[in-house]
Length: 96
Image (tube, rainbow, N blue to C red; front, side):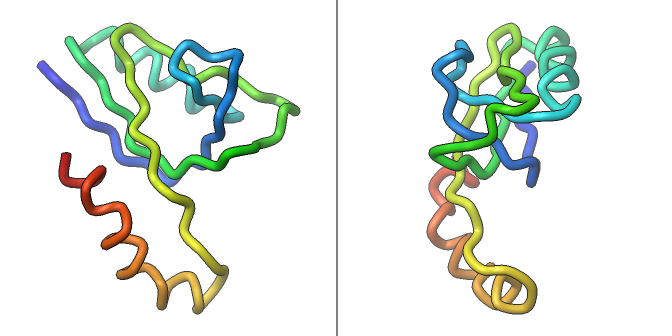
């Protein structure tokens, strides 16, 4: 079985990770555990080019792949107003 996980957890590029991405907190451990239960796991998350190395944990797992999305622009009301454009920009990744 295949699993696609859509999340708003911010990730970033990392040379220290087999998938090429990392984040902080417990999210990588949860994704690693879920990936063991499925044949293929895809994590669809917004990814930055640079992130914080403080508390960085590689986003890895068995047969786990990261499908990066662009980060939403703006903050507050502006971010919400620009959301439809963000969906259009990332539609190919979201649908795939």
